Image (cartoon, rainbow, N blue to C red; front, side, top):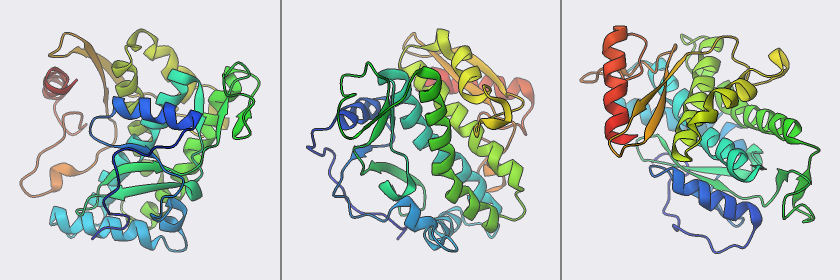
Length: 287
């Protein structure tokens, strides 16, 4: 059984400004639960990554068994997508909707995992968050008030990067054949993909290009989420009549190397026309 797996309630009855924001963001992610529970007794992300990262390694081992592969780099590449996507979607969604950045400190956040190793739920245990001076909760003791939107965005960038640092450290040690920079870019492209998903769900696609630039390009190398080159982002119609946005990945999750599996729709190993067709189909079905 993977670390952190247990049954947890769907709703936690806690009154907190950030809990309300997280509940709203949780509605945007139908495939993963987003919970606020100060009394959660799951291992924290810091504990999973401590020392040689035995907790994350156990998760990777479970995924390796599930995938029926002997190659360490495959579960590493897949997890370098799934971990960042989940936390980035929550953090970026909170920033875009309520102009709040939840406490992403690894010692205050827990995950649940499927028995086969994928992260399923993210549980926030701290009521602290960063916000702007005009936030209705700005006077609360749990709020760190920052001067303006640029500083709040910088908080988002620093916190998200710090949250992922331990996980990526363990993955780099585990999947030596997947280089340090490849793992980092895989994680950042997962964060970028999460931004695209959030923007579409919130009806903010007209603002997507600007948000990509400010979150992933502003500040240059001083920005811990900095992407020196951006992958192609395209919009597609959905089956419900809306629009979705997808990232044409430049790094690979290696799923195509798993027996009986093929490349994911955004995989760079495909012919460009085939990738375009599959990404459009995915948006129509699930966007």
